[in-house]
Image 1 (cartoon, rainbow, N blue to C red):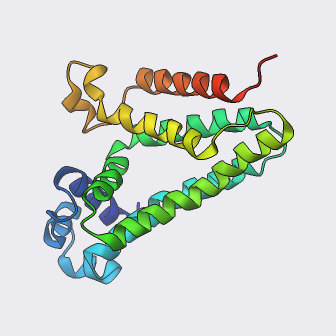
Image 2: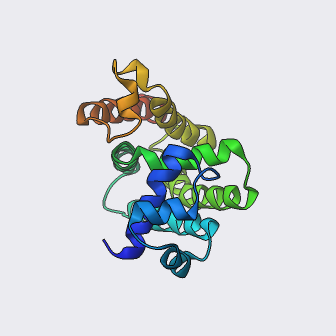
Length: 203
């Protein structure tokens, strides 16, 4: 991990713990073990650092979604299964990032940052929409409301994170660490069963 990426990871940990507005550049530099000048050199401001964090975290996912969507060797239902697996794995392995984004959106205190987050979500949705549209066009999927189906997937994941107390006696521990593999498997299986029942035509 290079210095720039290390600063991003340090900032993410603080944003998750204290919120964007309550975290200072000095605190980020202290956690990262660098001076303030170095943070400013790489990013210029806290807002630019936040933008860099989003770009850094979303680049892999955008590439991955394009790869899944454009793969003609697998059918659309398998693409949805892979998509669910990838999202559940990434979000529950690093729940801090997901929480920071949703916290920022709910507070709506920084419209420019919210716009960036929305654009990132919309960019990803383009590829996801294509999978559903192709499945409907080929007759693999029933005619469904695509937007609400997408919301059903990501709304379930979000509520899973928000309702950690349903799955353990020590919910606070889940808020600060990677989720156990058994919970990842449980959520992934539930979403896949939900989508299969919702999308596939009855024989």
